[in-house]
Amino acid sequence: MLLQREREALQASGGGVPVPVPSNVPSNLKLDDDAGSTYHDVSEGSSPDEAFLPDSVSSSTIFNWLQTKDPAAYKQFLSDMKAVQPPKRSTAPSPAPKPAQADISSALEPLLQTYESLDDETKKEIWLGALKSLNPQLIKRVSELRKPDLNKTLLPKLTKELLTHAEKQAVGILKYDDNASKRRYNYQRWITGITTVMEMFKETQGIIVVETIKSFKDPNCVGNQSVFILVNSRVDNYFRQVLTRVPKFGEKALQLLQTLCANVTSNDRHHYHHLFTNMKITTNESATHFLYRFIIGRNQSELVGNTYQDDALVNYVLSAISATTNPAYMILMMSYQNDLDSNKPVTFADLERRFMAIDEKATREKQSSKLLAQGATAKGMEERDLSKLKCFNCGEYGHF
View 1 (cartoon, rainbow, N blue to C red):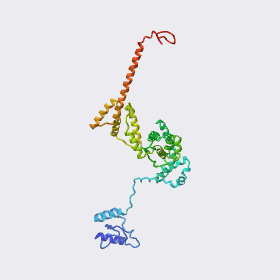
View 2 (view 1 turned 90 degrees about the vertical axis):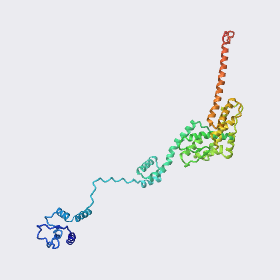
View 3 (view 1 turned 135 degrees about the vertical axis):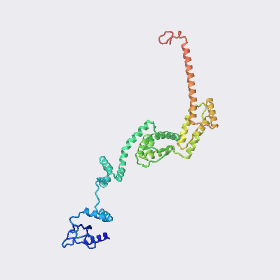
């Protein structure tokens, strides 16, 4: 009840905080009959704020009194005061503002529209400015504009490397031949060397896969142009005239040469498979020479798309050499046949090595016999009596 009446008196007086009346209260203050507190000055001509408190009453005295008489009101007062106080300023240093992303795309727009006509130094400055701006869209756009210039710079370097390695790999000149078989054979040897060189560089890798010639993702890329220069430098005059149909496109040049020299159809695959699988060793032919023909036939068949597993190659070789009359070959074949019948693994590499070892041994024995014969002849000449021989040069006896 006391707190409520104090608040009502406070509102009637225009503000202020209720205080207890000390014993030495001034005479110009009027006491309320119903309350033991003084709220305002009732003297005429004075405002409530001026007569609110006597000079002898301090703020600490008021707070102590309020805390003693009504702790709940005291806590509410402190809460209200905190609510109306301005927030304290933080003493921590404020973080430095992040620099705004430099956007110079609008300033560079006139230059970007005429990029191709600019000199190299200006193009370099534009690229550096785009990188400093940290603007992804601007960097991407300038990168696209720089591609043709980068290709122009890379083309002579890549072309030089391709031509240099073609010389080191002894890639021959592809020559036209009226004989279709010879023309195909020449092309297969030539394309093998070209493939080896192209696989050395990432710009030209993966274009030739067996007999398939793939296309570049970008027909105008530096790799495609450099391949055309390489191909054009390793063909004869007739094929150079033919390649004028597809200037600057290496992939199309290779496809055109393949069509003219080694066009692959299902009939071609069957034909070369038949030739390869029906090979036979001839009379008095060594296994070394037969394996040489066998490997060439296999390569020709695989170049048109046929593939062979290792066990199939073993069977083809044993079948082809079965007609031999060489005792050493026959013994080795019987040994391998026994292994196959016993389900023991036999590899083509091991079979090739064993047959060639037989030929090497035979060659060594033949050479040893020849050396022995020569030695015997020389010894017989040393034991010969030369006393009756007359030298045709000096006319003396004992030598010639």
